[in-house]
Image (tube, rainbow, N blue to C red; front, side):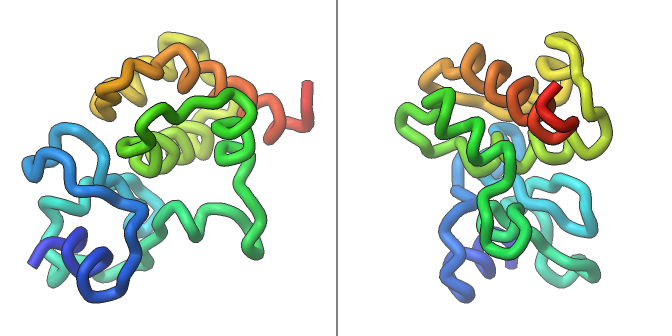
Length: 136
C-alpha cells in the first residue's frame, strides 16, 4: 500500500493529494526522514523514518513562514497542489536559505500547478526565505 493511501484513508490526513499516481506531479509530496518524497509511489512498508505533512511543518501548531507567505501572496487558486508545493519549498529553504529564481525554478520544477501560480509561488518562497533569515 502506498504511503499516500495510509495517510489519507487510514489516518485521515488530507493535505497530501492524489494527483497523477506516478510520482510526476508532486501533489502528494511529504517529508520522510527530512527529505521530500512522492507518497503515491512509496510503499508504506519501506518507511522507517518520521513522516511530516503540511500540518506538521510549523513549530508548536504555528504556521511555518512558507504557509504565512503563501497566504500573504495569495498563491493558491484551486489549492489542490499547494500542500506538495509548500513541502517541496520547505526542503529547498532548508538546504538553501537564500535561493535565486533559478534555484527556486529548479527545485520546484517537478511540482505542477494547473492554475499556473508559479510567479506567486516564487514570490512566496522569496518572502519566506527573507522572513526565515530575519527579515532582511
